[in-house]
Image (cartoon, rainbow, N blue to C red):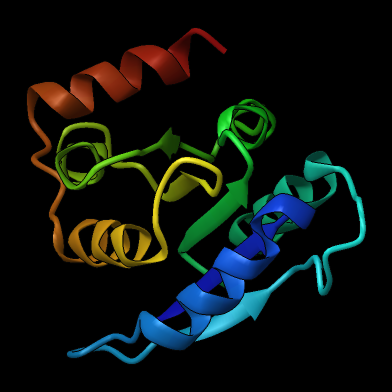
Length: 146
């Protein structure tokens, strides 16, 4: 499974940790890293845009984006019609992001979650299955409004 991952300078260390400790059990993960590659100050929209392009081009079906609060990265990623980015801060929210909203991008607030919690949230999100039905109807409503 290909997963695109990107972070600004505030999420750089967490991104490195995630790439080391999140591994697919049934389906190994190939990371497509769109940056940043260091802790020098940079702007999060650059990385949400790169990640969105990877998903649009079908090089990856899922993505993980990381910035300090997660808010900026969420706003930037959700500008793209085909992206459903969910800002998560605990395991239950990560599970519902996939089950209820079919989130294809997980956004993690590096300043507010531990490395261990980030790995747990990602693993739960990857294992979760979208419910469909009335939840799909809601996604269709959102898509029809754009």
